[in-house]
Length: 220
Image 1 (cartoon, rainbow, N blue to C red):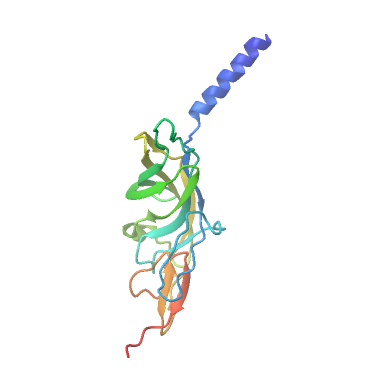
Image 2 (cartoon, one colour; image 1 turned 45 degrees about the horizontal axis):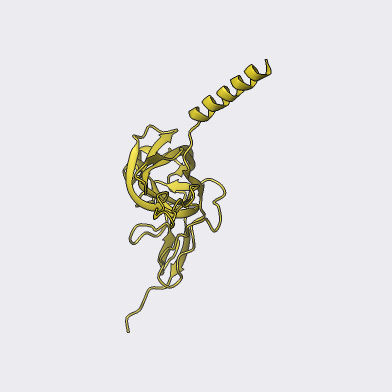
């Protein structure tokens, strides 16, 4: 009886593992946007989150001029399988070729974005994901000062250096959508710099971002 019970339990565990969505490559966390460079306004996104983002990202569909984006950390749990003695190279580096988005809480068509992100074995890479295209913004606008909540479901598709394909598990990113809540001139008389970047000449980042004001350069 014990043998049969243990065998049944092992079988059930095996079936459960097969049914679970798993990939050694996966989106690990949303990162807090880095501060823009004080001189150039450029953004440097590290391979791992300096700080994991806390809270719900915000998108203002009335003022945002470019696709809604957030930085993420992507991990690769595979180990380096190279063997110098046997002349075998590492084939476990992961190359992400696209990100696929679906949406919960809004009637939006799925969206796929081409990508070129390499995630090293036993390591991480940072990426800024384009999660909602600007073309979708009008259909997301809530009435008046209301805020609506949607969820962006995102997963990555790619190949390992071995040419074996992989698809990551779905990662869910909640987004609070408003119309005009981030409006206004954030940097009167100066230039707005934000990470993720805003549209050219924008006076508001239009979404959750880290931003600074930079004095305009005066020609001699």
